[in-house]
Amino acid sequence: MKKKLLSVLLCICVTAGLLAGCGSSSAGDAGSASESAEGGEDAGAASGEGLAISVCGGSEDAMVLDTAKTATLEGLSACRHLFEGLYKLDQEGNVVLGQASDVQVSDDGLTYTFTLRDDITWSDGQPVTSADFIYGWQYLKEAANDYCDLLNMVAGSEAPDDKTIVVKLAYPCAYLPSVLAFPSTYPVRQDYVEANGDAYATDPDKAVYNGAYEMTDWTHQESVVMKAREDYYDAASITAKEITWQVMTDTSTMLASFESGDIIYSDSYPEEGNLEALQFASGYNTYCTMFNVGDKGPEVLKNANVRKALSLAIDRNRLVSIRNLGDELATTYAPSGLTDESGKEFNTTVTPWFSVDEADYTANCEEAKKLLADAGYADGAGFPALTYIVNNDGRKEIAEAIVSDWKEVLGIDSVTVEIVDSFFAQRQEQDYDIAYFGWFMDYPDISNMMYTCVSGVSDSGFASADYDAAYNAAISSADVKTQWENYAKCEDILADEIAIVPLFHQQNSYLFDADCYDGLVYYCGNFYFGYIKQK
Image (tube, helix red, strand yellow):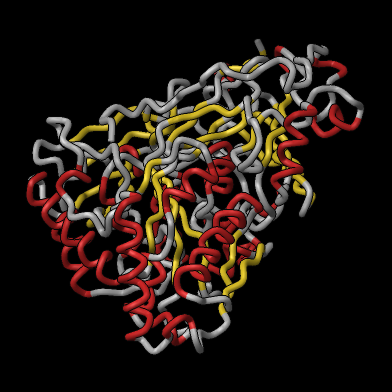
């Protein structure tokens, strides 16, 4: 991965014929983004001080706005607007100080002393204090959700006064600023959590916000509206004064809304056709098939040979050609782009899980048939009915291609693909057989990718003491060589277990109206709209 944290890439390749024209009405008559859309105007019709934009916010299931519980790109991105950490993203996508005005780091790299800004407030006017950060970190841990162990490098933290936070680390962590810029580590107001319980942050009045925006409306299953806060300390830098996040699940609807100008951004779209408006950014992510190997999973998938057979039978070259989005075939879990100081790629030091050369696919299929027969399912006979769940049409197409490979190569015709509205909840609760899984790295360090398979973290139910030991040895070492040796052990264990099957490493791609707007910040799969300006 590139060591610098610049990840804005706005390729100006939108054709005028695809998009509705750029709006230019005044702030006084713009109304909300949704109102503008209903009136036939462009979703970003307002200009200047009243710039209002409308974007695709994904499904209702994805729009979780509790920083301790959200785990989807849409939810995390939305939280970046409503809340802010000690660090934040600037207009170029760099990690810079946010709610902190200063940080002092000890010579051994184990103690960080932060001083908070004097001009930071919550949306109800109360000052943001160091205790709000300490509580937010405790709340994250107690929530026991996907990112509950994100701050495991922290050995202790204290707030000696309202403006000072002292953080002591268990080991030096060069990527700590990136972690503290991530939404899961943002401050939380204890009084709102205690007053609202499980309903915290599920409606505008059930949370307060310390970021550049506050939520003013949440029409569930329809839209979330955020307005820029006038009392935000850096309000002068925020150019998008209102953002409407449209709740959508159908990718054809997303594309139609984009083409009509009702929305100016979507990171989901039908994966076919001539999408001339697509923008691309560096990926740092892996697109996978996930097997439920936990207690709730089907018995047949508890057999590692069955999982390996299913993996080897997948024609990954065909999947990449179906998407036609410049994806890179995956032979490891960690994506390409992760480099040491000399520029050496981590992937070049790791034993590939399997060969993806087209010439070797026949041999892969023969091995898959033997493995399945040894497990008692020769030619697919007796293989139980399973469901492969996904969350949109594009992923359904890929899943169906995989299921087709299983039928053609292995004789398995009992697996069906289904789009489910509660996809993320079902996967997290391990209420599924097989599922789509993709991981966009949250910050530029191998640990972020490998953490997803630590015992108790993965939605696959995968758990391995050997894996945990290798991972912990890697993250606690300051020596890159030792780190990489242990991360390679992690890869080897995952390759043997096959609970998660890497398919390809995809570029980040999204629809954005770059003819009419610029200023979009795109960072490790997250997006920030606050700096968008109309051209």
